[in-house]
Length: 373
Ligand code: HEM
Image 1: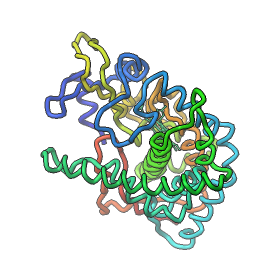
Image 2: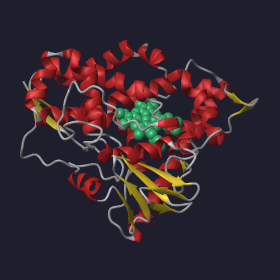
Image 3: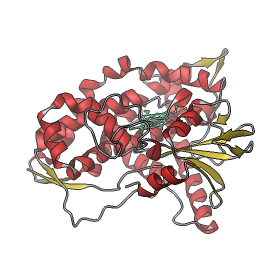
C-alpha cells in the first residue's frame, strides 16, 4: 500500500515538500538518525493535537514526566494484565463466534484496547463510544489541501480536546476526593522536584494515554487480520504454529505500521545527506518507507512471519520510543492466536471496498468485515 513511499525512498531519499513546508526522509538510516538525535530534532512540534504531553516535550522535562508512568508500563507490570486481556478477547469473540462473519474493527480491534486503557486509567469503559468519537477527530486529517479544510480540522480538534478535557477534569475531581487503585489516582499523587503535576499536565497525560493507546492498537490488530486475509499461506502457517505469534506481530508492525510517519522540528541548522536544513524546519521521519528499506531488511517487500532480527520503526526509536509498546504487543499477542484458533479460516470478500482511515500519519481501515468458518 506504500508504492509512492517506496519510489521516493529509491529516487529521492530526502526531499523538501513545498506544499507541506517540510523535509521528508525515507531511508531507514535517515529515519532512524532523526529519531535518535533528539537534541537536534526536537519533539516540540507546533500545532500539535496531542496537547501538553511528554510526546511533545524535550529533555529534561520529558524524562521526568515519562518516569512517572514508566512503572505502570514495564513489560513486567503489563504481563499481569494478560489474564484480563484474554478474558476481554474471549468475551468479544463469544459475541460473534456462533456466526460466520464479523467486523474486525468494530467487534474486536476497537473495543479491546479501549477497555484495557480505560481500566488502567480508571475511567468507566461504558464511556468508550464517546472516546471513540473524540479520539477519531483528534487524528483526522483535512479532507483536502485547502485552507478551509485545514481550518475546519483545527476547529473540530479544538472541540474534541475541550470535550475530553472537561470529561477528564471531572474524573480528576472524583479521584482527588476518593482515590482508587488506578493510574489517574497515582498521577494525582506524583511529584516532580517536590511539585505535584498541574491540571494541564494531568489532562495532557490522560488525553495522550487515551488517544495514543487506542487508535494505534486498534489498527495493529485490524492490520494484522487484514494481512492474514491477503496471504492465506501465512494465515495457515500462523494458525498451525502459534509460536510464530511474537515475530509475526513484529512483522505486521514493520509491514503495515499503524503509525507511518513521525514529525520533528530542527532545533538548530543541520544537514542530512548534504541537504541544509534550517533551524525551525519540520522534518518527517517516514516509518512506512524506512520499514521497507532493503538496506536494513532483506526481502523487504515480503512478509516474513519469523523475521529476526526485525528492527522496525513501528514504535519509533530513542527517548520517545512508544511507552505503550509492551501493552500493545501483549494485546495483539493474545488476540491474534485466539482469532485464528476460534474462528478458523478468515476471508475478506474481494468486492468489499476498503475504507482507509483519513490521516497523514495513521495507517488502517475504518471497517474490516470478514467471513470465517
Ligand atoms: C509514543 C506507536 C500503542 C502510549 C509512540 C511513538 C510511536 C508509537 C511511533 C513515538 C512517537 C514519537 O517519537 O514522536 C504506537 C503503536 C502502537 C502504540 C504503533 C500500537 C500498536 C500505545 C499504547 C500506549 C501508547 C497502547 C499507552 C497505553 C504512547 C506514549 C508515547 C508513545 C505515552 C509517548 C512516549 C514519549 O514521548 O516518551 N507510540 N503506540 N502507545 N506511545 Fe505508542
